[in-house]
Amino acid sequence: MKFKILRPMLRTWRSKAYRPGMLGWSLGIGLLIGFSPTVGLQAVICVAVTLAWNRFHSAKMNLPAMLVGSFVVNPFTMAPTYLLYYKVGCQVVDCHLRLREEFFASLDSITSLGTHILVPILLGSLPFMIIGLPLGLYLGNRIEALLEARRRRRPRLALQRARGKRTGNAEA
Image (cartoon, rainbow, N blue to C red; front, side):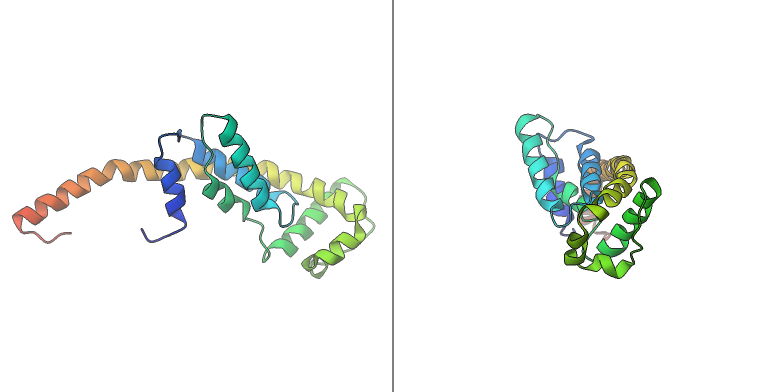
């Protein structure tokens, strides 16, 4: 396999406790958590949600897929994303501050304003969180369908390769 990040997802997907559709739910919840304004806590929240869900439910969440979804907002995209959250939130509530992208590059400057900036950012992130869940469901289910098609195709490919070696064809 070329992409090492997919190995843990595939390992969970192949386990006996895994149920179809959980890859989509894991990715969707990861996107929901990733779009939330919880700077630096997304991975911790994903681990906590996965551990709690897997402890009390028979259908197991896929932690690697949830973590991949939560990294949609990362240190490189944090400033423009939070500025967008702020601008969208200012459409809902009255904002007297005019902030630029550079302001969101430092957590120090964000925390200095406190509640003046917290409410618009929280309200501005809600539409993205709401869109993130069905988007993750769709993408995860598509990935799962591709993996299932690959799994069904693999025995035939192995059989064809074995026949090619016996007859002397070097297709593999």
